[in-house]
Length: 399
Image 1: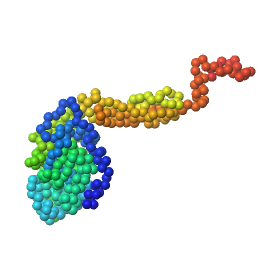
Image 2: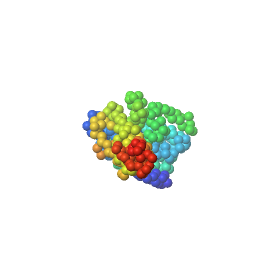
Image 3: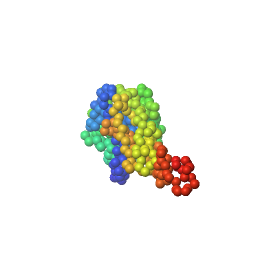
Image 4: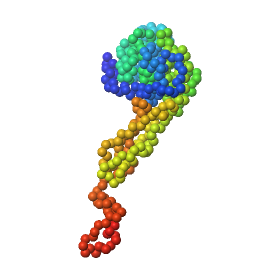
């Protein structure tokens, strides 16, 4: 219960940081996928570029273990030595590490087994060590899902076995995976093709291989994760991530006829149709607002920072720009002072925004400056005092 409350304490609004921020593009050449549900997300921004039934409730199978790993990494220590219970050793369905009661193994090795070979017994041992029981650990998983904004997800176990109360959707899985990929240990494990698991109290060693064929066989350039899942009810599922040119994309496919082909089609689409676009450059002038009490009529409002986003090719012409200026600008204004902001949108979705700052100083008018300016106007003349020695001087007439 203590762990459960610790997770619930953070403000749930923080989960909005990980919510999808972009709708599926309309009109672009959409990829053809066989999966019942699929999503393509940018790992950096959380924007979604493709969505097929992204909110449809489906079973996640072993994709569940991504959340299991998140909780283990945040509440356990990799070097902890775990003593396998008879309950964990009794798990025998699906992929298993064949844990034996009384064996000792590090939490890190259990995580490797869970994420690389998808060992179902490993997740039970992890849960019992971190939370004291699998039930307590599952409560932690569900609380974390809420914090991340994965509100269409509910877990009933740690490994993805079928249960009527164990479900999620493609969008939620993309959100959860995006969060998990921010952890360097998770990243290191899910991109491992093969490794050897060792036990602490015996000479037992087990070589395990990644179940993700795209990764294990190097069949897709830039592939660096994440996880497979399969059960008779969930069908064949896959979450794949690829990094190229500083961009990382996450493809989620659920209940697919060919999960590897579907994931590759989504990723191909993301890297070919989605472009990095600069909507505004730093120092670019976008407005000239009027300034009261000034010498100049207007001040140049320039972008304080660049605005760069990813868009599909057909979306470029539909981007709009809204300029909001600070009302009642009054001199003096200094270079770099904020004078407004610019907001870029695609239809109703905000793409990005940046502050507008003054491109130069605008000093305030003084009595002397106002007098001097009036005096300098063409044809302006002022009579000299009577009997003044400079009465006839042309200099006085033009000052």
